[in-house]
Amino acid sequence: MPKKTIQRFLPDPNKIRHHKTLRIFGRLLQDANLWHLNRRSARGAFAVGLFFAFIPVPFQMVLAAAAAIVFRVNLPISVALVWLTNPLTMPPIFYGSYLVGTLVLNQPEQHFAFEASWAWFLESLSTIGPAFLIGSLVCASVAAIIAYLGIDIIWRRSVRRAWLARNTNT
Image (tube, rainbow, N blue to C red):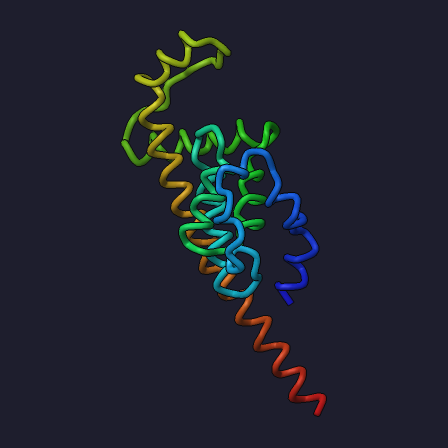
């Protein structure tokens, strides 16, 4: 079942409750719905986590946790999925988002070379920034919708299979 599979990969709730960046939520983390694992909380958490994984902002974990609290979905899943974009995966994911943005805005791709400087960052906001941000929003929305529907379908099929197996055994 998806529930058992997901639970194997979930971080410890106590570690998340006491994580230094999530302490700002204080008592809000005591809501039991944030820790339940059912179809509704899992599909919403996958959508929230993947949405914020594609958004190029600092503190993605905090934003995913805030959204999980607002939508009352599983907080550990939401926070864990943000790490889909890590230092190894971030360049190809964000470059792909930039390419999607150029398609959406019907702009030609611009050649650029990354530089770790404030001047490069400010210059790129006007050149590649709009396509990158629009592409990130499109990719985030598509990933969230696919995750929401995909987890819902997988969960329902798994439950149906379990019920059929239970009925054939009796």
